[in-house]
Each structure stands twice: as structure tokens, then as C-alpha cells.
Image 1 (cartoon, helix red, strand yellow):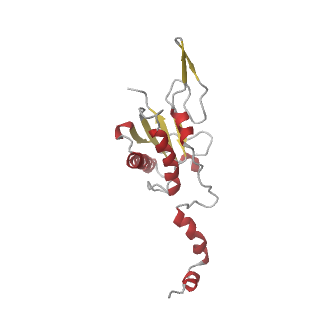
Image 2: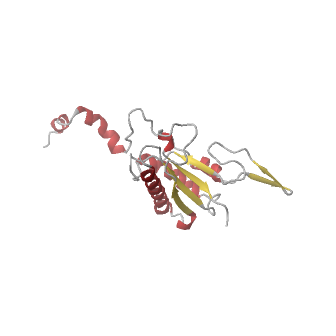
Image 3: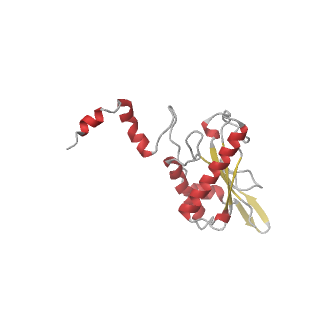
Length: 187
């Protein structure tokens, strides 16, 4: 018979408290909150073109937050987090990708094509950030293809490194490390 109490007390008390977080894939830096998951219907609304045709007149709906202004493709920024300097998807990232996969598989978006754009914060060299953002976008694309059977030709992946920062946040902010999904024009 094993002495579980003795084995547990042999571990450092700090490690015992962190173990549930590590096992759940919920490792976040001090002061960092887990990302909010955007539901699939909100993603569908953001990626669906917002126009209404009336007898030759086209009325464009007000652009939702995170979407491109009228005349461009629909888009949404998603908080898909990775470990520092890694392209391995976290459990939290997979929760968001489950909603994205459902949205891209929905009847409203089933015939659309998309580009997944990876972005990084300004920490690190521009060359390294470029490669990392490309690798992260490819990881998201591969996950969606493998888990949601989305046709590979419907999803392109690209990376922008830290060259396209969000204007409301400092260049090194966590919010700059993001994945943006944009609808491509119909062909």
C-alpha cells in the first residue's frame, strides 16, 4: 500500500498549488487573466458580410467591433494564446478554436474562404516575430482542418509579426499577440 499523504508532502507546497493549473492547461502569467471565449454565433455575425440589397441600393450595416469598415472583408480578432515563444496550442486556445471551427462549419459560412493572420507583440526581433506569427497561424489552420474537417483550400494562413499592432495597446502588450480571421472575397 502506498502512502499518498507522505508522497504529497514530499512535493514543494508551491508546486502542489500549481499542479491543478498545469494539468488543466490553464497556465497564465502572474496577473494575466484567462482569455474570454467568443461564441460561434458572434464569430458568424462578424464574418458574414453586412449588406442589405433593396432595389439596386445596397445598405451596409454598422461595422461591429473588431470588424473591418464598410467596403472591406469581414474580420474578427480572437484571443488565441500560446506559451511564450511557442506555436503549440494551449487548452484555452483550443476552447476558442472549437467555437471558431463551429462557426466556419456553419451553413452561413460553409462556402466562404478565410485567411488566418498571426500577430505578435513587439518583444523579440522582427525576423523572429515574423516566423513565430506565421507558425502560429499555421498551427491554428492545421487544428481547424484536422478537428473540423474544413477543406484546406478554404483557409489560408499568414503572419505579420509585430508590424500591425492594435492602436489601443502598447506594442509589447499581451493583446498584440492575437490571431485575426478575415473573410476573403468570393471567387
